[in-house]
Length: 226
Image (cartoon, rainbow, N blue to C red; front, side, top):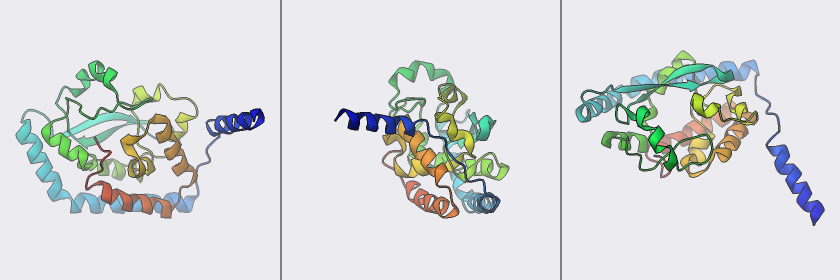
């Protein structure tokens, strides 16, 4: 029994130290980038009417605040960039974050709070339906992000990463990914890392397309989104 327990312990230890191999085949990377550009262009054009409606609603609720929110995120190989979203919180949300950290409902190097008081009424709806994420299609066109990949973390989150966790940064971050379509906020940080690394280990065009199709259903409202 003791030997069995030691073997299980060794397997768990190996799991959290195993080096991830990235799919760097040119054929995959070129095809993925073409899908990103075409998909982002189609999305921006086809959803332009929705962009306008959301912009009007945000301004009606808070005329003095901006429509879009930009935030520094960490991308591939640790490169920082500005990620764009529709603003779903009050204008001084970042300043109020420190006093809310003790209410964090997700374990590890992330902050999530189901009833975050900083979220506006419009913000609750666009976050629930993931509409707030749509401006990231511009990030995809720029090449900062891909349609599919690990979510780009905040610099303060990366500061808490282990060397194992940093393997999330080996590929271009995405608008959606395996974590978002399978568990999202219902799992902790370690589980999210494992889902992201599973995606990286198994990257393929077919896998990307499956995640994109699943994301369509998430846009209609995931019970785990907040």
